[in-house]
Each structure stands twice: as structure tokens, then as C-alpha cells.
Length: 337
Image (cartoon, rainbow, N blue to C red; front, side, top):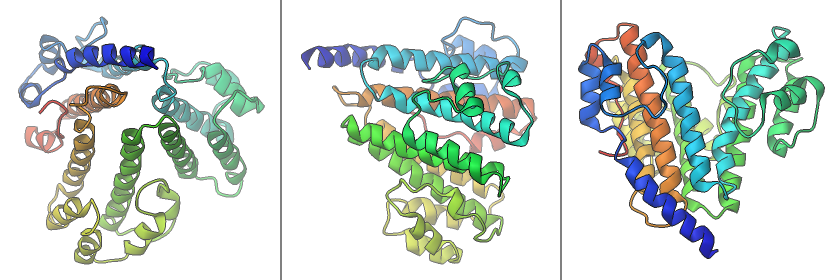
């Protein structure tokens, strides 16, 4: 145990240095205002990989490499912990979704699947192809393998891509929380439970905004949060004010109240997304000042992942001609600020 503790203390020290290169609000202001945002990002040392960053057309490739670098770094910092699987399995699940949809619709053969470009996680692409197309047993977590089998069977009756996504996403989230609990990380277990709540909240807010009914509502909700699926279903039909009242005793009362106050605003959904992201960032920031354990390391990993997604969104918005103010509304709270 002493060896592991020393390893994490060294890793935390390294993370403290890495945190200095995370972007702050001043950096984001410069990126938003720049005619050449990639030049600004290079000037502040944003990129960890050495590939060319000159052209916005290569944004997808740039950020795939940056995410891969982030995962390799995490492996170096916590390689002796099963917690690493929490951050590798999402890549595997995304590949499984793509393979299952290709197989079930007949749009992609096993041979064609070998040619796709993906970000690999815990399992190699070749192994995942064998699991989907040949039924090979490759050691997938039982609930994820079961979800894949279930969608394979149900798709014959209900050929809906959303079912594949929701079933595998729910299996993944349950697996992530169980891994965190077994590893004794209350922080990570709590984070993913809160993430489930926030995602469920986003589902019902979006559906209410677009005036969707109850059809397939349950399929879209995570059952791994602190609030039950039946609770979300129960409040779904409430009016906006009643919805705010229902959430008031929960930890999400302020998010919902503020959202309801802005419900007539044209940017209602983007503003709500920012509020949800800010809530989750505060959870990550709570680990920033810990001096031992895995928490500061995985919090940095998640913060860097958040930063990559946010910068990519801004760059994409600039490419598609979004107005400066519209992009600024979508800038979320940062780990450093």
C-alpha cells in the first residue's frame, strides 16, 4: 500500500504542474475574439501533441489525438488502478454502437468495419468486431455484453438506433459506478451518479421544450442517479413552475429554477446546458485541493476532457459562422477559474 501511495503522490505532483497549462477565462476570451484561434491556442501551449495545427479543416483529427494523449497520460498516472477502465470503456461502447448499427442495418460488413477509424479503449477494434459479428467472448463486462445482446434481439422488433444508444449507455454508466464503488472512490461514484441525474434532467427539459410526450421517455433515462427514473417520469407532465417546485428540495433546485426563469429566452437550451456543465465542474473542482488519492488525478483528466470538448465546440462554431455572443453564451465554467 505504501508503494501505491507514493506513486499517487508523485502523480498528484505531476498533475499540479499539468493544471498550470489548462485554459482560463482570459484564454477563452482570446480564442473567441481571434481571427486565427488555432494560433492563440498554440501560443498558450494548449496542444500536447506535436502534429500540425495550422488548419481548421483538421480539427477532428487534432482533437482525437489530444483525447488519446489524455488517456495515455491517465494510464501513466494511475496504471495500477481498475479505475482506469471507467475512462476506457466509453470508447469501447461507442465502437460497439457503431458496429451494432452497421451489422443490424446491413450497412457495414465485418470486413468494412476493419477499415473504420476509431479511438480504441480497453479493447482492440478487431476484438470488438469479433464480438459483434462472430459472437466471440472477449471479456466485455457482463452488463455491457448483455446490453449488446439485448439490442441485437430487440432491433428485429423495434429497428430504432436510439434503443442501441440508450441501452448501452445505461449499461456503461452502471459499470462505471460499480467500478468506482469497488475501488472505494466515493468521489467518482458520486460524480457519475450526479452526471446521470443531470443528463436525465436535460432529457426532460428538452422534451418539454419541444413538447414531446411520454413515448420512449423511460428508454432515454439513466437509472443510476440519485433520483429514480420513476421520479423523473412523475414530474415530466408538470408545468414549468410546478417543475421548479418539484426540484426545489433536490440538489438541482437552482438549476431548474434559473432555467424556468429563462424559459422564454431564445437561448434557453444552450443556457441550460451551460448551467448543468457548471454544476458538474464544481464537483470536479472539489477534488482539486486534495493532496492524496486518485481524486485529483481523475478530476484533472475529466477537466482536460471538458476543455477539449469546449474548445472544439468554439472552433466548430467559428467555422460555421456562429456570432461571437452566441459562442460566448456557450462557454462553461472552467477547472482553473
